Length: 361
Image (cartoon, rainbow, N blue to C red):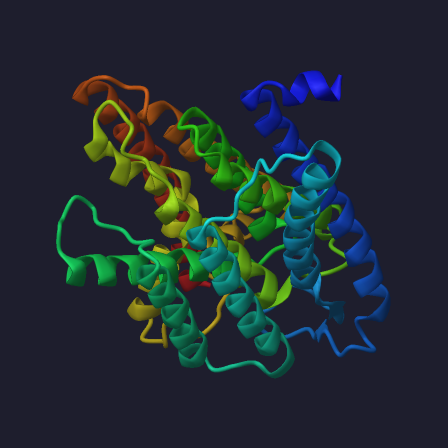
């Protein structure tokens, strides 16, 4: 049966991706269980605070399990396929290696922040360094503008935006990891259709780790991922979308919109939070409880229902990314964009209602 599967390239790729997913899932679950047991001894804990919704000390370290599960599952699958079947399905290109090594750097930055709380500017500088490394390995955005200076800044902007979006989104049980899982599924679908299997394999390993972590992180959570997890997840997804080739679409200029559709909710949440902080005259990097998830709870939803609503909205906006590359005219693309704007406008109405209600209290 296995030999039959491996005789066909498509079947081999699917089999490898499934193997990476389930191995990563199992590794992450085991590691999370171990880390939970020793979190206090390792000083990996998150104490309650004014801007936090938990009222008891919680273990951190989920990010360690996620990172190690991704790396170990990929390496193990490569080794096993080479040893058992004498084939190498997943060749780690210099670009993929750069993404993984830079991801390790971002993971370490987040882990240090979990221990000693780095200044926001320090974390920002580290993210910029990681983005520069990608640019040097020719992993960059062009947005159809052939200018290295423009490409350099737009690449850094995208990496910093998405990395911090998932860091800011990590404000409720299961929120950041669940949204990342949904976006990852959407990207896998698109990447399979574009025959970009190296990206699919990394995403499969990441999604397996996220699902294993969600087993312990969904409300009521028994462990948090910490900045080591949220920064690594955001950076990995951001860098993979830059490395991906979306220009195989019928209308290549729509390629710019495809990742924006997939990441619409994290981007929208980050943008509105920053605007609210600027309106109130507070520092942009100062934490608060004005996120989309918090506003949903202020409107009467429970924490679990607020997270589920954001899951559904993320799916509703992101699923359009799987349709955009299939449209063959401008009208079809405009329908997708208008639908996205309508959903975001509904979110804005909900957010604004909750914000005004809070201001009047």
